[in-house]
Length: 144
Image (cartoon, rainbow, N blue to C red; front, top):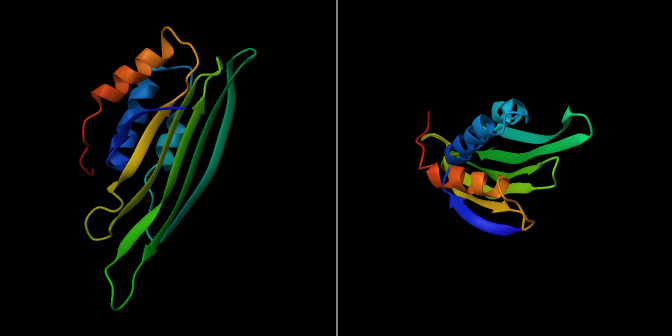
């Protein structure tokens, strides 16, 4: 896998996946988008979607999130966890985002983090250039 860029927040990742959805209409990104924002106190997702929009063309989407809140009498309310998004297209092309998020629960948790975008290293005339263009267009998103 080849590292492409880092995203600074879960909102950036969400925007990137929304843009993938616009570009690649045969893949159902809606289930991923509906699960991407963790909630306080505990949030665990282990989701895999295997679909064939065209006969014999299987696409795999996966999302893993494991997040926990901390609320103690002598400590700040915080939320942190791990994040993994994967997409393998019917052509065998790969997109992954792996990261960790953390933040103060009083200020839009878990908006901060480090999420790294990777793509496969196989040959692609159209797919990877489109993914790179989308990644380049996503700018820092604010909570909302």
